[in-house]
Structure formats: C-alpha cells, structure tokens
Length: 242
Image 1 (cartoon, rainbow, N blue to C red):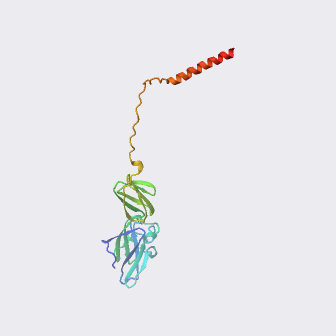
Image 2 (image 1 turned 135 degrees about the vertical axis):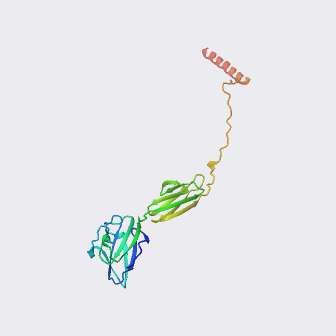
Image 3 (image 1 turned 90 degrees about the vertical axis):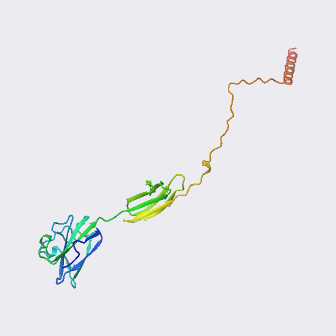
C-alpha cells in the first residue's frame, strides 16, 4: 500500500480543502484517521477532531472506497467538527480499522501535514515623496511615511497624506485578507499665498513729550475790533441810564 511518504511534510491553511490519495491494491476500502494537536491520542475521524477511532470498529473511521487500486479523499479542514488547531497532523490510511497503537503488521501509509492559522487581515505599505508625511487611515493618524499598517481588516480605506509646505494627497483603496498593498504618493509643493508675504515696515513719527508750545498772539486787527465793541457797549449803557 502506498500514499504520501511520511518524510514529505505538506503545508496547508486551516479552512482549505486538502487532497489526499494513494494506492491499495487488492483492497476495497481504506480507513483514514488523524493524530495531531488536540486530537485523541490514538487518532480521530477526519471529519471530527473529537471523535476517537476504535480498533475493530469500522464506523469510527473515515472510510474511503478504493477504485482500481486508487483511493482519493478531500479533507475539508474548515468543516471538521470540534475544529482544528494550528500545528502538525499525521494522516493515516490503513487497510484495516485499527488505531495508531495497533498498526503493527497492518499495511498502511501516512503523511504529515502542517496546518497554519488562516490569514484574515491585510497590510498597507505606504511611501511618499518626500518622506516624513503624516498618514491618516479613515481619519485616524497612523504615523509618518515610510509606514507599514499591518493587521487591518479587509475593506475599503481612505488614505490621506500631508506634509507642511506641500499639497495634501489622498486615495481610496480596497484591501483583501492576506494582501500587502503598496501605496506611493508624490506630494507637490504648495504655492505661496498673499498672506505669506512679509508686511512692509511702517515708520511711526516720533513725538516729543513735555515740549511747551509757544503762545499764539492774536493779530492787531482783532484787538481793534474788540476795543470798538467794548466802547460801543459802554455808550449804550450810559444812554439807558439817562
């Protein structure tokens, strides 16, 4: 009986479908079971990590029909009752319903499969010209370029980049699980505004405090008019008294 050699460690991710196959000449059925992290010591069914296999009980194993000396099985790691933990698993294909502690003298094959935790997040790698720009992801400050933003949930993100003296840039980007997306933005220098021009210096005239101003003399013609008015007023008063 042949299958995947035990020295060949296969890699997979929890949730994917892993194809298993082998040959079993002269047999109609093979009995599959697995050992690994969190699994019963001597093995469990392929579709249940909590259901132990029992030597002599065919129904406790995952049974696969042999067709033309060949057998094939699709291991749906995302649908295993009880779940699977990340780690190294050994899958056995035996010609008799026996657990791992009773395989002596029984034709069987085995293969090692290392299952990793599924990747559920993504990463942005953000660069700018010039570097050192502030980065906001969906309105939240995240750091300065160059910048990696790991462990982001899949979805749509608004990325804003700004740097003093330059026109801000932004963009909308979709991120998928397991994806590392490269973002590069070139910032353009901002044009100077009118308020940026220096104001002209204004000369404030100096004043001399405490300086007495010379008295202003009334012109002679004004004095003559005043004297005439006084004389005329006196004559009127005299006539009234008579």
